[in-house]
Amino acid sequence: MFYLRKTVIGLALGVALSSGSSLAGVIKVGVVGPFSGQFAQGGENFKQAIEVYQAIHGKTVKGDTVEFIYKDLPQVNPAQSRALSQELIVKDKVSFLAGYFLTPNALAVAPLIDEANIPAVIFNAATSIITEKSPRYVRTSFTLWQVTAPLADYVAKQGVKSVVTAVTDYGPGIDAEAAFKTVYEKAGGKIVDTIRMPLSTNDFAPFMQRIKDSKAEALYAFLPVPITTTFVKAFQDNGLKETGIKFYGPGDLTQEPDLPSMGDTALGLLTAFHYSQANPSALNQQFLAKHRELFGSSDKVTFFSVGAYDGVHTIYKMIEAAGGKDGLKAVNAIKGLSWESPRGPVTIDPVTRHVTQNVYLRVTEKKDGKLQNTQFETLTNQPDWGYPGVMK
Image (cartoon, rainbow, N blue to C red; front, side, top):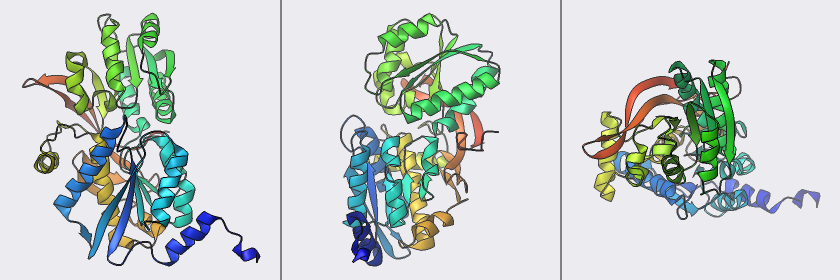
């Protein structure tokens, strides 16, 4: 009876696949994200953006209803990410997985999606390595390399000779540090110190003293939302702004829902990112208006929102190409897909399966009494510079 010796998950996945991965007339999408806890803003953004997309584009594709099923994963927990994703595949019989806010949780599902032949569309997790781990990953958010490499080049061109980097000590933070250091030093700049801070850190005073002691002209920092607010306030409260140290970072530092609590501390921060509420495009205005119509406000719209909105667009296109039956065929069908997003023009790179997109240089300023990230320069067609072979 050797042929019966399978893992439980293998048997269950085989049943799910042989019986069809969704009910007749309904194609299910499982969304794993933080709908509670400290990262709950991200989960709320995911869900609202999905509802906005369906309100604009409808809930059916080629006659099939697209249904979203949500699973709460409030923190870094790869084992729970696998368990929730397995439940969605086996019990709920989803045809697609989506969401995944944090990198370790996204990486954990690679064996599952390969065994089940189900695409996973990453709405946020921003470490370059993710899409290397399975040909069924597609990402519609950004990577730290993608937004940091052009920022480092810009900082060097501004004549800044020395920088200290400060990042959270996990995958995206390490990527951010490597991206800035690689490009900035190649352009002739000097990194005088590299600081890595534990993910659980809320007291930044010791790190601020170390930044001050470095005598660097500028700081480049990356931290995940929402602890960015505390870090920016610490920069001000510990007198670093008064010393004239320039402060650069990706747009996580100044996402729009956090600006009111930062107040004037945020003024003048220069960031590079792929989305701002202040993007003047007509499509972005429609995107924000639909949020206001459905939820009463667009104040909490963030880059998490556009990652999810464009993720749903990608899923719809995969359904058009392959229904809910062949995950690899679906992924192959959207390689090279281009469309206009609220963030600007985007394309799924055929090799990386990650979006090529504009990166905007922005400065935080006050307009009509309200803080915003005003875009002042557009760097077009930026790839994931951290994917092997992209950075020459």
